[in-house]
Image (spheres, rainbow, N blue to C red):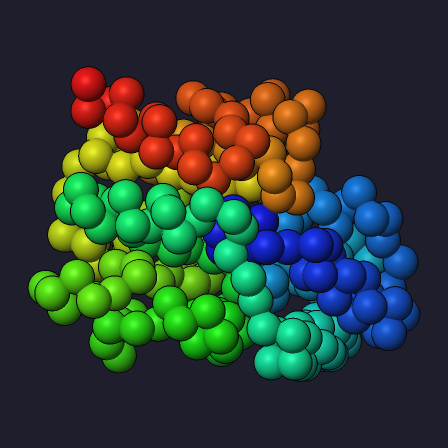
Length: 234
């Protein structure tokens, strides 16, 4: 979501950094960036593991302290400021809807903050309690939502892609295009053996950072995904 369909002006990274400083951790901006796209709890587990080790008696307490601080400022941010899609994203959604192509949003966000964002955008329209759209009238924005809270292993594991496929009734990964702005997005797409693994260069990582990872295409704006789909259909 953030950095691929939802505008991210480094807000998530700033929230991470604020939580890190507030809970007396020390980590470089580059290290934070390398973990973008991960399950957010995994980020703090990794940082505290490096800091004091998993066997430390206060390891879990420290992880939860940092994570809960991060969750509060992240939720407050999106409640107060809302969220905006990147230019062209709604055109992509409409193109997919018109061509019977299902849109699933996967995210390293946990469910609570994902729901805040979806509601602010109006993208939760038509989703049921399982976050799947069953409305056949076309009165929806996306077909399903999958978060890191919904799987055992978040990115770079392919589990979120597999769950999204299941929710959308897709059995063959070669019918899937994966789009994301982080190394873990591309790693998960590669592990899922998707037909086309696409990196977005308008999010958190640049071409130099993403080009070394397994990918089929790199795009500079959301609407380029339409050209990729059209080329596949040709």
